[in-house]
Length: 361
Image (cartoon, rainbow, N blue to C red; front, top):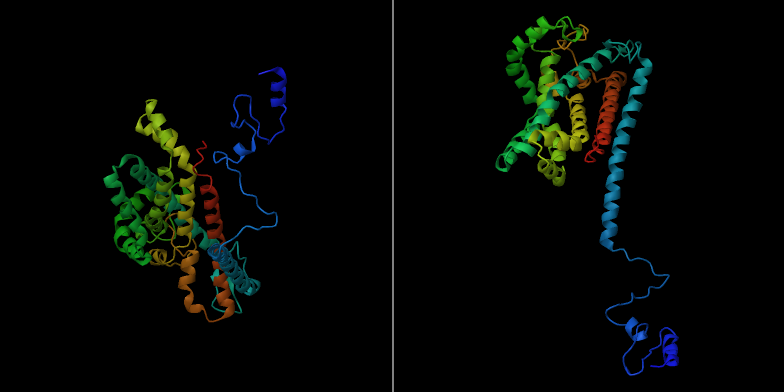
């Protein structure tokens, strides 16, 4: 091959079949035949004005999903608006400070004085007692089921814990008042006698051994919210990346060290989020606390041995007075506070739970 022939071969225009001397019929790189070969298929040309085809099923599913989301938001907004509209006239006719008063006198629509301080104390105190008891127990159960229990035992045990959520509230109330309260009397007397110098454990507005107080109600609530916290924690702990667990074990970590350094940091925020969901459940409990907490006209002493009414039980007990729009408005105002509190707690739980699984320490 001469120099002039090589020069012509190199300068051949792109897209034109070029053959080298002595290789007649063989197509070189850059030829149009190779560009259209099956090994390098070219994508079909699409017209600029052609739109993406959306099937009817996709449109229907998108419409149903979007409508369902809007419907749920609309229901929540309408409930909040209803409570607000019905509560405003009663709040305007109220002769006491709604946020700072402990009175509850709604029998006469012309002379109403009601406040939520006492209701808030009984509600929050019983819910916090339940949360303090339920959180470590639920965390231990979740870690046992996901990290220690054999598979043949983990599933049946998890089903048993989940079944606690299926027990009706009135059954929990009867069990707490008739079975648990007598058993807890010696414990309550010991706590009151030993730690009574602490205000929270001092004498309440009912005897410590009565069994119808915040202490008993909190323990019953702890059992009721246990499946909620356990279920969320179990789900979060089970999603710990196996590579992290195997890596910790390969480095010689014990089972407890794996839990402390890998599983717990990964699922900590999810566990706290589950606890907040359980708190929201405890704040709105009605029947069980109505059965357990004895009704008393004396104000609380801000002790766990107080009795009284929560927001929900006050509304349930006062249903016989729902014969006037102002009287009903007083109870609706209490319900509005409970609605806002529960909504805020659940929103906080979702926000905390959204950070689970990131493994942040």
